[in-house]
Image 1 (cartoon, rainbow, N blue to C red):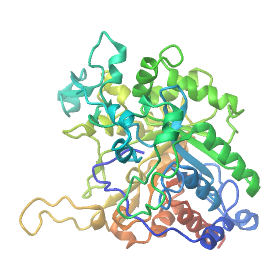
Image 2 (image 1 turned 90 degrees about the vertical axis):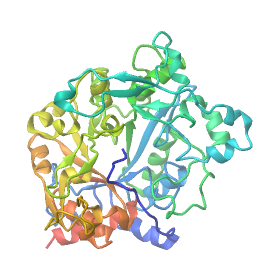
Image 3 (image 1 turned 135 degrees about the horizontal axis):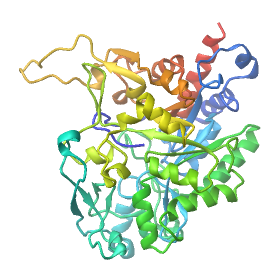
Length: 469
């Protein structure tokens, strides 16, 4: 999921011992958790009436290097209903899972490059170029220019020289699209990313990047071993960028080799149906719409981002004066098309109705589902400077109309990202991540993306118990 200005992103806990993992796994069941007798008498406000899903966001990265084999296997073992992953195309056109396509912040590539000259030489160092926005600045605000990696408009392959992803500059880093699968597996290992200073690091760099097929195989194997169905939850990540990279690398044909590869893999695994254990997600509606038009029949989820929160009103902040105006403020395809609207337009009744024409659910950021406010809200700090508040100061959490509006439109709601560390929790929860889960479960959320599936499953079990009463 995306970075937000107000989201400082997670601290960590020690690795759970095997008995704790086994106990957590025993608490769950397919499609919602808890034993069948609990579920039979429980009442839920979800769209389909089932217990909310616990989605292993990048596996179980609170305890293991994200999007690696032990992370996904552990998420399945503790009872996650679904395994979530971010997809990119490698240089040799294979779908691989890594949160960001630049590699220094979620792999050990910087260390590897110190002794591997081949890896070191692949660092991208060519600056991007600024492009003028084509929508009305008077109407929509924000910066007048965004950064592009198409440094030579006459050469589509010029995108392989810079590392600018959806307007975000990562000059001096490495791109996942410059390595074949064999090279990724031989040289580069996954690491923790969020709250890396607090999460376990002993396994960092010891497990290679996975292909999407390998994650599908993990879900099937773990599902068979546990007697339940474990779905997968792939994200079409940075689709405009991935398509440009893929075209430059000679992958596929046409304008959408990235999405075409996703569709092919899904069909090859007999998952192309609405009832198949898979959800396909993206922040960019253009990507989802293309895949639907190209024959993808799975459940689809429109992710919805934002930049910050006005803690006085609880309203979302989308417009910023920096690059995040383009990165998190609106789908990148909208910027390219001259559409200056922000993500908030998707959350209106009209926006939800539009989403329903191509998707089955939405994946909003938590403050879009529950208004985070500070009451009373003071005007200034003690030094006289304006007071803006912080997540730690939030003392009031109130449901917005989003869940009700989405359900009315026939859309389920899966919200992100639930983490255990105190710095990612609103002050009202007093450092207890279970309290946050329960707040959203009680509001009727259909599913939660979490870095700590073990905590999510345990909280859901407690929620199911209270729902029976």
